[in-house]
Image (cartoon, rainbow, N blue to C red):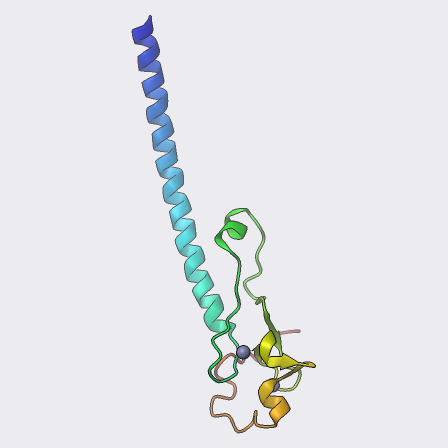
Amino acid sequence: MSQVLIEASSILTQKEAEMTEREHAEAEANANEIRWKLREHQQRFMCHIDGCEQTSAGPTLDQYLGHWLWDWKQPTELALCDRCIRWTCLAHLSGGFCQDCRAGRCETKKDVGVRGGNKSVQR
Ligand SMILES: [Zn+2]
Ligand SMILES: [Zn+2]
């Protein structure tokens, strides 16, 4: 009687272990995909001000795995400059204009339209 019980419980444990392993692999694959997407997202959405490293924070893993619907085309903590229409971090943005536009030196920048700029973005 007790022998049967032990066998039954060990089968159950084994099944649970297999399940957990598969779920683990799936979660790991998901996490890798999210990390990859996040990197791409952050390369696309970063402050265009020289020397500024601020990128979109993007979703946290928890937000994503929690079936939270995340729009990868929408950055966080960045806003478009009203004049040059490029992504700017909130620290470099004031009154809708980026630091460079306010200083009147946006057009002289070498990297105009390359770094952080995304003209196809619809507002
Ligand atoms: Zn600007
Ligand atoms: Zn910045």
